[in-house]
Image 1: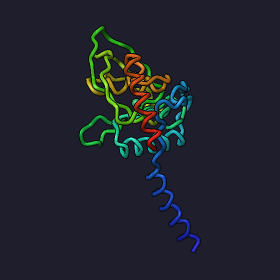
Image 2: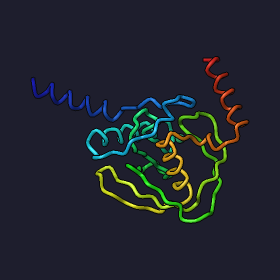
Image 3: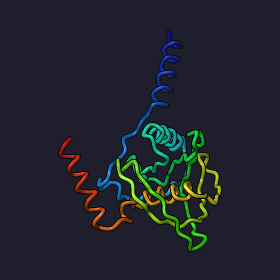
Image 4: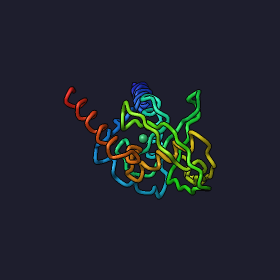
Length: 185
Ligand SMILES: [Zn+2]
């Protein structure tokens, strides 16, 4: 009996762990302004967080999620820009260098700013260094959407949102729209 109970419990825990959808903070929540701390050692707790964040991102659905957005203030990002939604990428303690002056404009959205998109210009060519889910370092030169997405998510870790790049008039309009929606419930 004991074994069966344990077996059932382990199946249940696997199910619960697989299905851990986390709450996403929404602008203008002040917790989105918290600066994330570097991760000294990548542990199983981080790997569980990564799995939960991926689940949350796929469920939303979105193409990137920073730990800041689920109110965990450690330097961790998950991204999947693939069409098949089958190429999850993990960046721990990411660092970035801009390779040249070229900027590219992309229409961005954010799971923390629902139902809003606007154009942001960012460096087109960057190099990124980070740790993977096992704590091993890697480096990449992402293109196009992935380059945009990494920069957008790294901003989150610094307490910055894509709407910060917009004019104050546009931000004011956005805040008015959000306030109206909150009043409407
Ligand atoms: Zn975002």
